Length: 184
Image 1 (cartoon, rainbow, N blue to C red):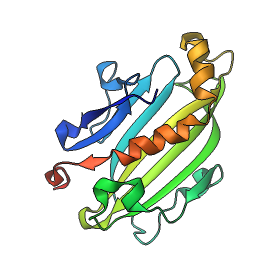
Image 2 (tube, rainbow, N blue to C red):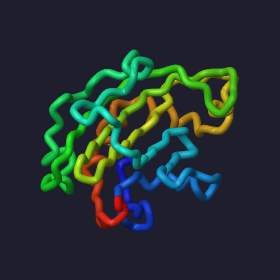
Image 3 (cartoon, helix red, strand yellow):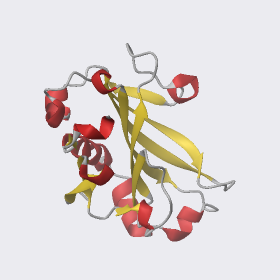
């Protein structure tokens, strides 16, 4: 899964290295303009990139009470130079969190246990919060549609390993803004 290629996002304004096994979900269904979504259909893992208007409380990054209940801070003082080298010259705040949550896919009643990695990159000069998340299902409910569609061997090998955090950090390190006009 660690073999990745640089992908153009938002018409090439942003680029990011996403593992080769991940496909662009916009080829399968409609995705909102502020998002880019990729999934590995064999493991049900996904990567989501979102561009949002910066939250009003620009001094700190928080996730609301419901999210705070399952997310733990990975590092309150992210070293932008090492974690996001393409943003080393940009005045920004970064917060990394992770957590596990029981989530139902689509409108199903069965819920899966999903490990979530989330990076929030707050760039005040463009009043934007960039969210990069990776969802890694670690337990699939028998009744879930995912349990019928994933490749069981690949799911066990990839989703159960600790490598997913390394993959997420590789994705972050590759993040690059190529055209700042995207934010105008």
